[in-house]
Image: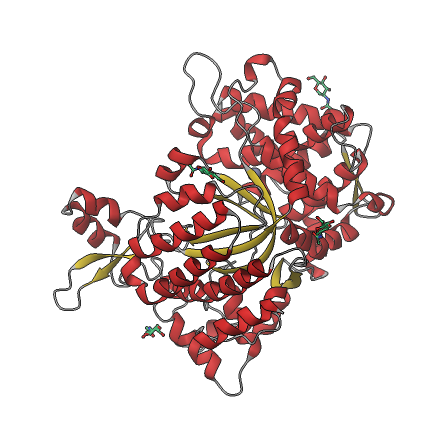
Length: 558
Ligand SMILES: *[C@@H]1O[C@H](CO)[C@@H](O)[C@H](O)[C@H]1NC(C)=O
Ligand SMILES: *[C@@H]1O[C@H](CO)[C@@H](O)[C@H](O)[C@H]1NC(C)=O
Ligand SMILES: *[C@@H]1O[C@H](CO)[C@@H](O)[C@H](O)[C@H]1NC(C)=O
Ligand SMILES: CC(=O)N[C@H]1CO[C@H](CO)[C@@H](O)[C@@H]1O
Ligand SMILES: [Zn+2]
């Protein structure tokens, strides 16, 4: 079978699965210098994109250049390549309809290792390395290469491997650091610029965690996630985000963190199951202005960094929640899903604020409840529940977040959205998450909640209209009982019990399957794709050259 026969998907059809959303904020309150910085940073973003293409596959850059120079240009082919960051579908891993001589799947090790290197070869080479090199060989910031003559493997730091691009990025970051007013942001830009040259990232990780709450601009840039390295999950890929801080939502989430103890005190479990060592994760809420590098569809709506354990030990971690991306997903996906699956009379209660507030509560609620088993030999819940832990933990955060919403409404800490809005939006949100299947922690977690609450009568299904609804009278007890059952299972760390629970509640019912089928037939998009306002008026160009950098800057000066 020729590889062209395996290509079945049509580019336009794939793009249609992703609803475009326009992302940006009103920049009128940004200073002139801040706007210039934004322009410069978009230019850096173009460099990061190129680094990432190089990290993913050695043929990427040349294929992309080929697409850009082909006549006539196929704009959708270029758009799709940009969305997926390469010629393979990020959702199912299959090759996209590009020139037929492409590998059917992305090389597992990306371009972090020689394509012909086996795991066995790596292991025997690794055994003979010096301790320092062993650390680098399995570390985040070195690629493994093959000497063309001797055929031996060797290590190359990112700072040398991507020197041409990192030098330029570093220079522009340093220029930007001089222009931003916020000292903590300036410090981060400077130290990250230095890390690009020194290959030592630790200090700048700490500076990232310390970016001030007052800074209007929030930036994430550097090598972070290891998903592109499917061979060893060791090598980090470059990613880049520019955001504008949402001060109002950030304050709201601070308020929730302050209520953490109060929620813990009221959890419907015996005292020994309550968390005696409550710690709130630092959370910032932002609106995305631009992204590049190791970012693709499906779009991330939140991320928690850093990943480097040494940095976490020194400075903790920070969760970034991206409000305008959440809003896009709500409008383009959750709303249409609800229109088809939630009873007509309850659609009035569907509300973005309920969706978003519950997301914030979910993130805060990860801190609630037992993280260690109760009793004489405490162990982490994760180590006891193992492969079930993620799904149960996600379900816990969802349901405890909803429990917290009820509590905060009762004690006046929260005045809006209404309880009805929380409940109905939560129902629609469950149907959205299950759509991605139950092989993934969030989907399985939502499936469990939906089945449990249906059983307890908190949700109902009307066979005639084929729609779900909330029973507002039965819902509070169903929520509180599910919160209790999950927290107790976690505190007991009883894997067999969790297995039974998942066996009972973790399968998709026929009525839900039926709804999912209807969503599929209605061709509701599976996710969103970004159109960045900051970039709209600028001609897409690759590679980024001096002239384009200036274009960005003058655009932002207008
Ligand atoms: C700009 O700042 C003013 C004064 O601080 C404020 O009233 C206004 O809401 C701000 N506008 C935006 C778009 O943030
Ligand atoms: C964090 O930033 C503040 C200024 O915003 C500074 O005073 C403090 O020294 C910084 N802390 C670290 C550990 O760099
Ligand atoms: C909740 O749990 C209580 C105590 O176990 C039980 O009596 C009640 O029937 C449960 N109700 C629901 C709706 O789950
Ligand atoms: C294998 C391959 O085509 N690699 C190319 C990737 O892109 C760089 C820069 O454009 C080229 O130098 C490589 O030859
Ligand atoms: Zn979560």
